[in-house]
Length: 206
Image (cartoon, rainbow, N blue to C red; front, top):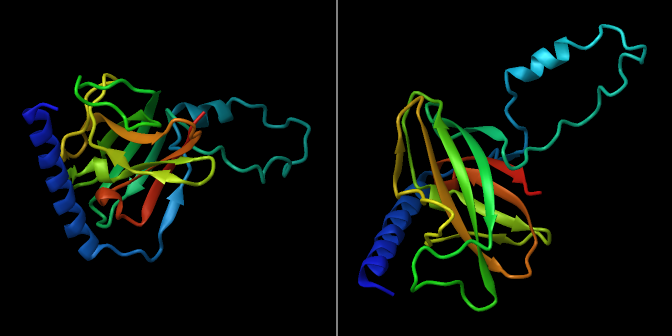
């Protein structure tokens, strides 16, 4: 491994660690929730309005139908620990078996890299200034979760630590996870305040 690559990863680890320690000192776990509800687009209400007023079916038929859970490509509106800290987060795409962006690095034996691209739009009055690497995890079909790896892949640029996004603006980046080769991933999770916010967004894979 080159000295530059090693120094970069050590610096990222130190910065992320400092952010996590600071946030953990103020984090509150009461009222924690997992949101799987995708944000509605402007086209959705219009489509509903175009439906005939009377379809001939009982009025309550289908009323109890559960809303579709968010999937890759959907946006979830998330809240941080402060009211001024909110963001629309999209799990844009998943690149399985992602290739290393450094010729000296590769997954551990029996492991593979999975890179997930996120889009973050700061919707609050406060800028998004956070460590996205500590905010995300993936979960397999057995319920086992996997945290991020300080790895750059050819899937695309990773988030910087910290990442700063002005109110109303949008940022994109990949977060890479090292998982067992035979693990079947099922869900992606992401939270504000380096994952310490009470609300966590969750997207279904596949």
